[in-house]
Length: 91
Image 1 (cartoon, helix red, strand yellow):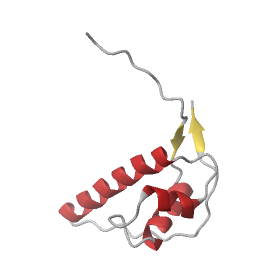
Image 2: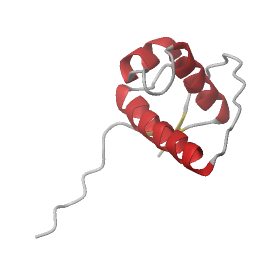
Image 3: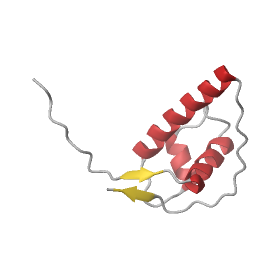
Image 4: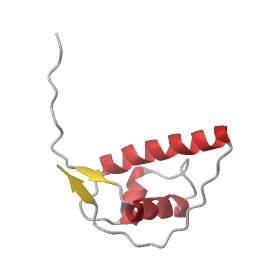
């Protein structure tokens, strides 16, 4: 038996470059991706409409991306100007 798909009540967001820079800035303040926690990131970002689940998912993806960069020897330098904007929600 296949379980029916139940869509989450929380709207999805589009991580704009500015919103991602704000996320990276918060992670850097907390000492890096391995030391940062979703709750602390959310508190530092202080973006209306952003939830803990949004941060958890993005942090997991960010950590995986960082691991991939280390394996491939790629380094992306991110300059952050702390401009947290309201996220764009997708339907």
